[in-house]
Image (cartoon, rainbow, N blue to C red; front, side, top):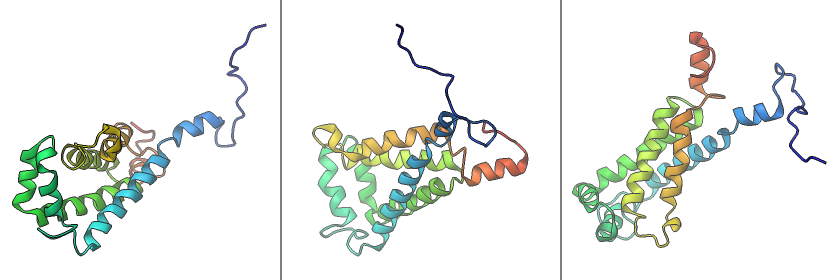
Length: 174
């Protein structure tokens, strides 16, 4: 008796003969897009509305955080750059997170938004969470890895990019 996986038993849906597996493949990145989009919007808004965060000194401020991680970061020069204007850096991170989150969630310029998210996560990993030991305690590295599939694939379905592509008559995702 031979055991194997049957590949001819997929039940097609009514949407042009697509199987369950085809649909699962098409929608596979959607949960990641929603999670990262909502999370980055929330993170950015949280920073913008936190009375302590957008200050150059004091408990919970961006300035205090940067000074605390300076000597343990992978790139102290990047922290020094942020410390030249911690409030401006805090606003840049917060507004960047909101923009990346919105772009990712609605799928507008999705690859660019994902690249922005990856760069924010990379910069935070190399500065704030670099000293996490073991390394997997630092969540910025996991966020960086989560952004990479969206950098590569974009937002092929349920997105403004897909709607614009269809409107231009480009058809399939390229």
